[in-house]
Every structure is written in structure tokens, then in C-alpha cells.
Length: 407
Ligand code: NDP
Ligand code: MG
Image: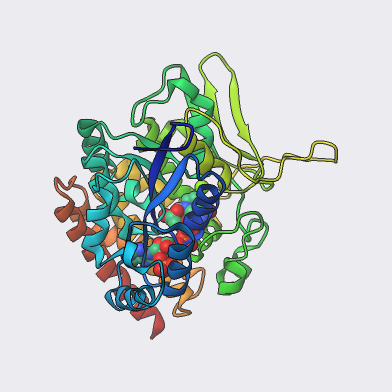
């Protein structure tokens, strides 16, 4: 660890998915606290302009661009800039794994979207890194592998996803990643209900991409915004909570809370319920995880209690949002079923974003892929390669369903 002018440690951060929504919020915080954090490594897929600007601003020692053409374009831009010589540009997905285990970093912010984030998160866990986890898909796909890798290497996983970060805050010193906290009766994950909370099923079926990504409270990447609209995001988060906090699926409930002020709750055996509240801004949970166990300033709007603030709660509707049941069933079925759920969902969401299928068809693709894969998905894959083979097979089946729907 480096030290600042006061002799205090400066944490070297690897921001994975630096050009995305989580990445930008993380870099905002690093820029605000240069005496505490340094952006040592940045990664992205192919947004060259944005990454070039971030290189000028943060002067990382290493950048990974997974798209080789984007990596070359970035090298060319950097070679003409005064920043250039200090930055090593690595290309390809293997570069992510290399960066994740680098001895030059103290923590990783895992902000890549989807299954593409898994190999680097797993490598970081295997090498005992501190992981600030936003990439929920890694735990959904490979919860068991993640738990055993992190536990044996002593890697600490701190949740960044706002609901899980809220639970982490409610648990305080009792938080131990991947183990059941003492005295807890159940977890209550709050859900905004997304943009279609009050829409009827027929109207939802044909909703446009623009309508689906217009989240009422949060500003996020396109994939997670669609997941919020289908409520698959909450299904994935249920699986994420199961692994992070070691509770069974039946001890995790979902409650719709349209204002997104209460970020989640923990109910204890003595009848107490603790909640964490705040404005819907990811800089709060990211700042909390970055500075834990201390607190740092984040430029987040404080809640205003002088007006007529309402906090509403209602049960989710499993008929209009079958994702919740699909996620629960996949978790109960165990093995690689959650990985199949995730793979099918990624394919279906991308097909919807590409305007190949309708919004309401996402659910059917996930459901039929889970059914088709049930015979082989029951076993728990012992290695990441075996898991990725299941993931690929599920993607092929889901893609075939998409192709059928287009005909
Ligand atoms: P974005 O789409 O905004 O950003 C995704 C990032 O991942 C970008 O930097 C992108 O690079 C990079 N990326 C995309 N595809 C690949 C790939 N194949 N290989 C390597 N890198 C890739 O996503 P979000 O920031 O919204 O979400 C990131 C993760 O955090 C997701 O797992 C999401 O569920 C989770 N999360 C997000 C929240 C939010 O508020 N946004 C809240 C809670 C959790 P490029 O820009 O170059 O394409
Ligand atoms: Mg969340």
C-alpha cells in the first residue's frame, strides 16, 4: 500500500467495468478522495473515448480492454498523449484475470456486467483479494465455487448491490461473508417494482426498450434496467443474498417499495427489524464498501424529512413478474440451475434490447431454457470450466428459442 502526505495508507483500487454506471460512480468517489484511494487499474470492453479520458484524469498504471481492436485504438491515442508512457494496455478477457490477481492492488470493484465478470471475480477470490461486488451474476452463476475459493484464500467480499449493502450495514460487526449471521430470522429485500409496477400484463408484454430502461428511481446500465423491469433483478438478488449471507431461500422475502428509500431490512429473532435508508444513489453503497469499517463523504442528496415523505410497501405480483418464482425454483433445484437461469436471461434481455423479441417473451425463454436444461443442470459443476460449459449450452438453447420467436 502507498502512503499519502499524512503517512496514511492510500488504497490501490482496480475498477472493473470502469466505463459503466458502477465504474463511473466509483471513479467519482476516487476523484473526491485522492488522499485515500488511487485508481491503479481500469478495465472496460470497448469504450475507447471514455477510457482515454479516464486515463488522462486518473493516470492508472494498467488498463485492460477486452476488445482487442479497442485496446489497439486506446494504445494509439495514448501514444500521442503525455499520459501514454505510464499506462500499460492489456487486451482480451485473459487480461481481466491477470489484473484481478495483480499484487499492485488492494481492492477490486467488480462492476462488469453479466457472466463476463465471473472469471476475474473468481480469480480475485482465489488470490485472497478484497472484492467490492456489484457483479451479482458471478454469485448467481457460481455461488458455491465463489464461497469455497474466497473462504480458502481469505478473500473478503463486501456487497455493493444496494440491497445487500443495506443488509451488510444492518448486520454491522456481525457480518461475515458467506456465513449465516447470528440471531437473524429473515432478510427482506426491497424492490422498486420497476417501470411496469402498475402496468397490466397485456400492456407490459409489448413494452418498448425505451419504456423498459426508464427506471423510475435509479440510473443504471441497460441490462440491469431491463432486469429491474422484469423483476429478474430481484430474483438474481435473492440468489445473491442466499450466498452472501448464508440464508436459505425460504428465509429471504421480497417486498415492493416504490420509493426506493429503504434499501433492505433484516428481521431478527427478537422481533427487531433494522433497515438502511438513503437516496437512490449507488455512490452511497460504493463509498460504504470502499471505506469500511470507516465512513467517507459521498456527494449524495440527503433525505428530506420536512416534506410529506411516504414509504409504501406491497407484496410483489408473481403473475405479472414470474421471474421471482423462476429464481426461487432455480435456487431450490440447486446444481447449475441458477447458472442456466442467468445465461437464459442474458440472452433474452440482449435479444429484447436488440428488438428481436418482445418484452413479455423474456420470461418464456428463461422458463423453457430451464426446463430443457433440467436433466444436466441438477449436478453441481466442480470446476469453472464445467460450469462455463453448462452456461454455453444454456445460451445455445435460449438463442434457439429467440430464433424460433423471430420466425
Ligand atoms: P453498465 O452496462 O453500465 O457497464 C458495464 C461495464 O462492463 C462497462 O464498463 C463495460 O465496458 C463492461 N463490459 C461489458 N461487457 C463486457 C465484457 N464482455 N467484458 C468485459 N467488460 C465488459 O453496467 P452497470 O454498471 O449498470 O452494472 C454493472 C454490474 O453491477 C452488473 O452486474 C449489475 O447487475 C451490477 N449492479 C449495477 C447497479 C447500477 O446501479 N448500475 C446496481 C447494483 C448492481 P464498455 O463500456 O467498454 O462496454
Ligand atoms: Mg440491487
